[in-house]
Length: 415
Image (tube, rainbow, N blue to C red; front, side):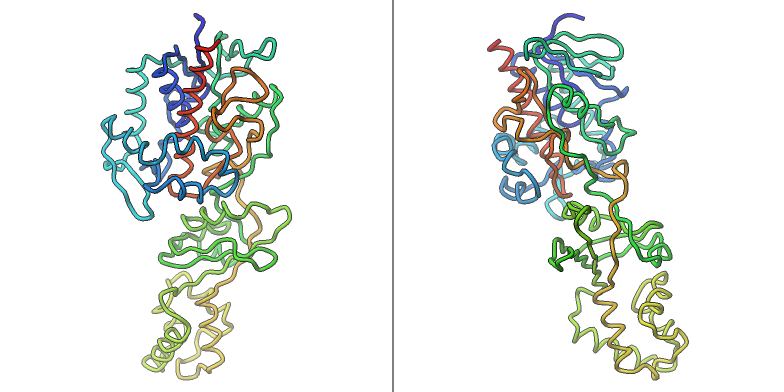
């Protein structure tokens, strides 16, 4: 094909923003995407609703990036959350802000975000080609072309925005790491983040499918230091635990090789111990002739009743009036501190986000330019930057993609 200024590899959030920015800056742009449609991973974000950013300050965004937040400070100021919201509203997508300042399209349809971006790329005359990039070609330390499965694409600059290695069915298979490594970049070992957790205790599988709302999840490391604490919703599965609280907690558990993590669930966070004990006394008094397991049915979900009987050591058929003060205390302790031991995260393929990636010390934080190869720029999840849930990871993708695209176009002009 004809020589182009910029080739963007990857048609996800970062890649589409990079292609748009490069085109608006005057470059001729080709976007290579291996899937038939752009933005495939965006379709599944926010349970199909697309939590595209967080309506907060740049400082709050940075506080939700547990590693390498300083690296993206500059680009985040250039395209903060407010600017992302303005951008999509200017593209015709009406937005709304929900709990935790999470921003969604009013329609609750991720497709609206993708359709708006695809239409914008068409307006910007970005050429979209379905092909899988295999190698970035260089001569004299400069980018010259991209080799794909179906052809070679000469260019003067490349934006590498292939994503990580989570959800491989969407096309994020780690190709970007291979291409970057071949050009001399160091790769911080990819690991899962925002991922369900496997649990040692067998009773979790007995509660498979049980969703808990308004509970507090606390995670401690080997030194008993609390690394995560938040109230919200979680889910028991056949392998352990999942749900919004757990995914958020997993991003704080970054060292499974050296740490053992313990999770403590407060099933009654609205009641302190004194108030909860008073309620238990009332329950056992008013239902004094009922079996303990039946009384439990008014305190915890049905699937949890046999587990509570097991953990408290109180016989299920003992009557309410027979329960001792010590047994009541044991029940209170379990209700306020159901403890489970975490074996580790589920596989990377089950993760929403990949932690790790191209080492940020080898990338210019002002331009997203590679320090190894002239004409190479990087954006999004392929780099070693990840965040907690709440729209922060997509905010990173938009901000880094925007700057990478602008910088690639500027590089071509200078060349």
